[in-house]
Length: 639
Ligand code: MSP
Image 1 (tube, helix red, strand yellow):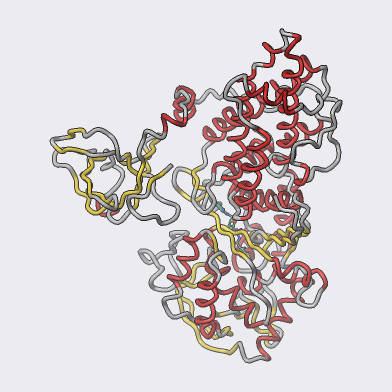
Image 2: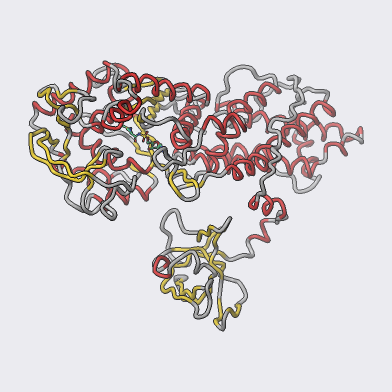
């Protein structure tokens, strides 16, 4: 935990108003909302901005198709986003629309400044344009003559345009990204940008002739042109604060962090820093990039036609359950595949079983055995007596000295999935505490009253701190937990420590916090999960997991399923046989870092001795080999 009050300015992308809010938009906004709530909980000075991007071809085309003006379309759909965020309980500080005068004013001021400084010139441009993406594609990026994102044909467009001298900032940008390792995170996106910057950076066309497009902000120095949508849109992060010089800008801009998905890394990691530099504005602090939500392996989007309605999911399963699922399921930076089954499985396992049951058991015990009051803090002697009951976890120490600092670290790096994972380990330990101490047995012996009270006290303290720490992730459930402990005032992270519940505080029973969902559809993953017995950590540590680099891969003759791999474990090479031939071409594996069980007994497969096993997961005909989120040398032990 930290007691330094910090300032935090967080933005989501501003969403195009030609689309309805779907799971992808909802995820980014929920992630940002969770981060903002967490930082408010920590006592920080937080400003959280979201909004809509309302200019450009896409909007003009969608409006024409609907037979309304672009402004009407923008008004309607911007309101739809706003309404979705209201229903999802998003607590933003400000909502910017690029058609607002406060935005236009700042965009034009910045353009004029760059024009006056000679940063913009008139030039000719020809290129392959995608109307869906509203951008030109270079020859290298084009796949089979089509847009790599939309898979639609590109149009060749040639016109006179204004250009921003972006190329002159290339060396500065490389140096900046290299000097600040956490500027763009996770690291994979930083590497992607550094890779991109190895090629010469082109100047950026920042205008569109009005003859082709009228729906945009006119250039202040030539009103026969409108501003290119990205140049217009990126400035929202600054215009919403009132622009340079405005008090809100001065207060928050030095702490700016953006959250985006990997689709828009380039404008945010290349155009935007150069634009800021040229305009004499400091660079943002962090660009936080998450992966895609996919459905059956394809990115969820309107144009791909597999939109998942965020609100329908929230209505069906509840806001907290939906929030928890998306925050827990997506590893920050990587893609995650959406399925309703996975959502239900997490809801049942993590929320109904682990958390819901714990809250129900603990509050019922306090009410039935402790008279519905928080017991007094136990003495050292009683605490020692509790320890004689068995392998009792030290909940105070675990929470305060392990969970809290680790959650803090995870949240500093935008890793909500990791924070939740840690909190759930703690929840598991509190459940174990009940199993080991068996308060109902202690209650039968009047001589054990003080030990029973000490146990109930530990449960009360644990639930109280969970009611605080869970509030950014599960706002409704956390408030109910706090209410059950008579805590009505807004939670503060500083109170997530033992000793903040006054002895005698009334405690009520709280059952059914997350009712189980009885889903009729077969659930492979959930079934498998339910059948696997828990194992002590010592059993797990018998398995020697190692990072292995694939050196060669070849099909095993006469086998459809098997591949023969040679892998490096650092100090030695091994031959392994893996049943993954139907899912991976040998060439795709060479050079990959995978995870292997290194101490398996050798096995003969199709006449080849396999010395180890490659870890992979599979469901419904899909298989994925485990790889690393960050590079580690071959042979590294995985624990
Ligand atoms: N208007 C631009 C952004 C301008 S920001 C100055 C834009 N809009 S968008 O409506 O297409 O939103 C893109 C963003 O929506 C992604 O960066 C991400 O935050 C979110 N997502 C949309 N689909 C998504 C997935 N399938 N998965 C994860 N997030 C996705 O680009």
